[in-house]
Length: 330
Image 1: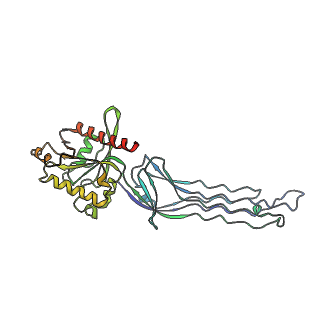
Image 2: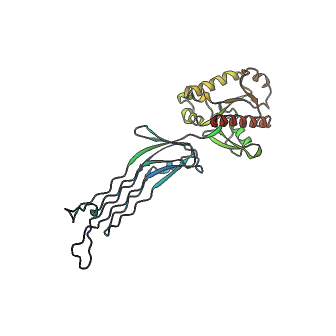
C-alpha cells in the first residue's frame, strides 16, 4: 500500500526539575547547597531515509513523544538528559506545520534532518542560586515544558523520468519491461492506483529512476479522477515522457490536453524537458500519427509488448537526464 500523506502530533520532552539539597558531612553541620540541575528533555527530529518509500507507518501511529529529562539530585549531580527522538521518513518528504501551514523542511536527500520540536531545558538546582548573602537558598526551577506541534507529511516521489498519460496508455506495461518493477497491469481505466518506481539499468551499469504516475483525465488539475493526489508526484521528476496510444484518433489533441493539465496544476511542470512516446506500435495504423506532431518535438514509437525501439527509448531517457544534470552543474 502506498501512503503519501500523513498527519502526526509531536511533543518534545520536558526538562527535568532542579533539586533542593544541602551537603551533609560528618563534622559539617551546615554544608552548602548542592542540588543539581535537571537534565534536558529529548528533542524530536525528522530524518530522510533512502530505505523508506511510503508513509504507511504513520497510518497506524499518530503521536510521537520524546522522553523527559531526569531530575537533578544532591551532590551537584545533574539529571541525565533524554535522548532525541528521530523519526525517519522517505526521501522527498515535505514537512508542514498543520496549524499555520508553514513549510518547515523539504527533505530531498538521504540524511537530511529537520529539528521540529526542541526539548525543554532542565531546571536549575538550588546550588545555582547561592550568593554571598544567601548561602542556603531553597530556590529551584521546574524543567521547561517541551514543544508540541501538529505536523503534516507530504511525500513527493523523486524520479528522473515521469511517465504521463491517460489511463491505459501503457505506462505500467512499459515500466515492467524496462525495469524490475511489477506494477498491476490490466485493460481497464485506473489500474494503477498508486505511483510505481522502477530502477532502469542502462549501459555501463548506469541507472535511471522512472516513475509510473497513475493516469490523468481532463480536469485532473481540478481534482477530477485521481487529480491532485498524484499530480504532485510529477513535480519532483527531472523530465517527462508523454505516452499516447497508437490507436488514438487525435494524438496531437491528447498531447495538448495532457500538457494543459500539467500547466494548470503548476506552470513549472511544463518547463521540464519532455519527449513524446507513441505506444502499442504492435497494432496497425500508427505511422501516420507521428507526422501530426511538430518537428520540434522528439517523438519515439515503441511497443512494450514486442520490445520495439526500447533501446532507443532508454538512450533518449539517459541523454535527457544527462543534459539536465550537466546544466545544473554548470
